[in-house]
Length: 111
Length: 114
Image 1 (cartoon, one colour):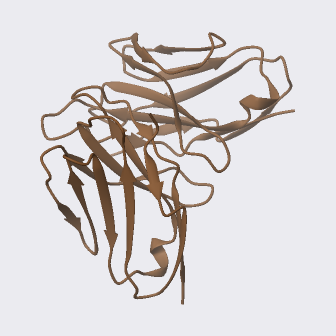
Image 2 (image 1 turned 180 degrees about the vertical axis):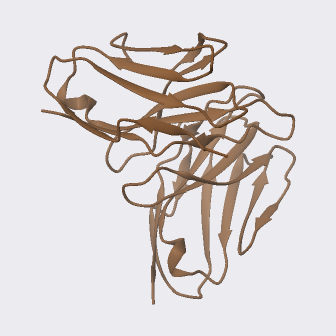
């Protein structure tokens, strides 16, 4: 039931791009993406609703493939501040407001 | 606009004791959820409160209980603490919207059980 994220960890040089995937075995209503730095709370990045809508936020964007129940987070021209662990949280039903989190992807950006 | 606030930030308890954690939701939010995050893991859903009642619950024992007050703030209580209860406890608040239920997290309460 827990969504599966891949890769588990990735190391990038500043300016490189990354893709983080989140797959669920269940039909989803929405996918939520968060970034968490060590010792801090998860910070909301964006929410994707079913319908395949792609969203963007500066150099971070995401898509949701409803047929595959898969979401991908795209980080372009990565900056040092992008380092952290990325989690996807899945919501099964509209109005449920309960997230089931994936295993996390640890992203390290080096100068 | 204050976000989700939690207290205390850190605390140490002895096995068998009881603990109460507190949360004030983001302004305009009426739903409060609690999550437990063990080191190196993703947050795990404990339960959710709406209109002062527990609306849904994750796979946690009855030692975990909660409460929501009329002003939407909430408490998480854990009785008979075990060493395995050591974790970061996160409070999340939200409000149901057609455009998607954005869920915001507080800074968390670090609980260490010794």
